[in-house]
Length: 258
Image 1 (cartoon, helix red, strand yellow):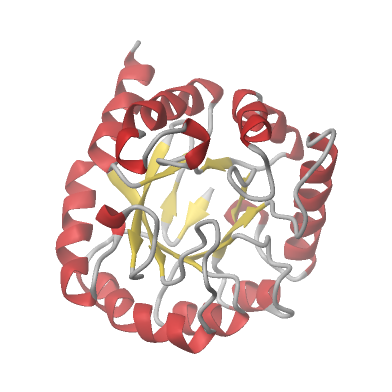
Image 2 (cartoon, one colour):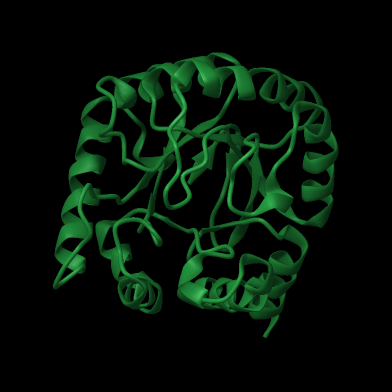
């Protein structure tokens, strides 16, 4: 897969989460504009290959903020990062207006939790800038019964939309959407058979970092997150999106050297 001017293949790379929000569920990921450069520097040193900026919390029960609010949160941090670091930057948004602003400021990828379907024109905007897209499965109602049919149908439809609008096939990755419209049991089923999504023919991103499927409190979920990262490496997942870069990068190195 290509993000920006970087080619990613034959490994499991770490995407570092940096949240520009006051309400993201993991408080250690929350950064104000003045803290962002230090956070990116540390993430790069610890082994991050991609930075993922989030300007809207999507934790369970979140209160949506507008595209204008998102833009006001990520505009300055994104500019600073692109000026100082040679790292691809993904912006986590499902608003076309936010994507347009982010890409015009040099963002390399849009990470869309609604798989390019929330806002009309999202896929065209990504294509216009020659950018990459992470397409995640989501649903307005919780899944019931077989989860694989709906997940695969949604992702296939979103990929077809992306390609028909001109997004390069080499700039697409897929996310099964752990924690979104799925019960705890369904999240585990998805994780344990994540490689099934390879049938769609695109590289995969896994996002399990400190999520509630692991039980307990967020501050106690790092060991389970690391185990899911090890599993991702064994399954050939291309990216893991995590809060704790150093620990997850180390786990990946150990899996690949085993």
